[in-house]
Amino acid sequence: TALIEMIDVDKEFANGTVAVRDMSLVINKGEFVSFLGPSGCGKSTALKMISGLLSVSNGSITVNGHLAGQSPDASDIGYVFQEANLLPWATVFENVYLPLKLRGLSRKEASARVEEALAMVGLAKFAKSYPRQLSGGMRMRVSIARAMVTKPKLLLMDEPFAALDEMTRAKLNDDVLQLWESQGLTVIFVTHSVFDPSICPAASSSWPPVRAASSTISRSGTAIR
Ligand code: ADP
Ligand code: ADP
Image (tube, rainbow, N blue to C red; front, side):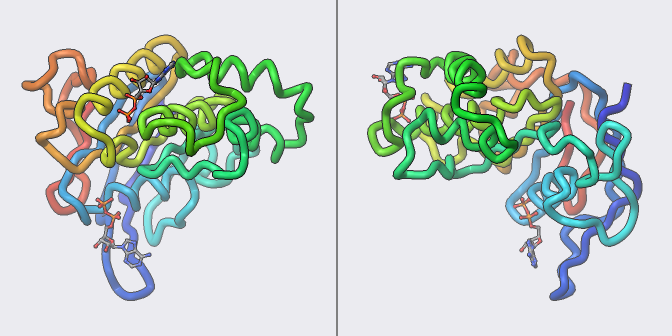
């Protein structure tokens, strides 16, 4: 069944830039989809519209039956950005607890879920560490734990590992694939480079689980599932 339906979506910014034109696609529950294309082709804009961070100019987007950004349950969506964006003065535990804190859960109520999310990314032992004590790859895994702690149905990842070295990126790609397989998630993974082993099937037979090329997104960007 469809989790996301985009119909004839355009996005024109106030300065006249048309970032997305006539984008239509259906993403089913449990699918793993990559938005692939050169920088500036509109991938981030599409992702932000799906999450409701940006409004559409024309067309419509529904996520789980609700217009984008209007789901009664904001925890339906987890978002991971290129930068880990952790609070530097807060511990790993506190960073991952934050989304639950914002939803009104006490530390005590939240602690089991925070620990579970940290275990999911292999960082159970680092709850008391501070971000500066961790490597770049570990910080990204903390940010994935923070996105997963609300148990979202949909995980949006915007060039999440672009700033990391190839080895770390390959490892994190595997971690995301495992999360996807084990958690019954739907994932949209944005990347700009066709040379990234994470999206080039020729470089890796298992990542991502490419099934068929589909919907075109503006200016030579492509969605792959
Ligand atoms: P990608 O993620 O594929 O690199 P973006 O979605 O970030 O592309 O950007 C698509 C186009 O929209 C680019 O030309 C970019 O400069 C432009 N753009 C992005 N955000 C804004 C904004 N807030 N105002 C004006 N133009 C923007
Ligand atoms: P980088 O982005 O710096 O390559 P990595 O995630 O590959 O980061 O980790 C670099 C180092 O951090 C590893 O060699 C290891 O010593 C340590 N490390 C990373 N994850 C863990 C973990 N779950 N437990 C213990 N040490 C870890």
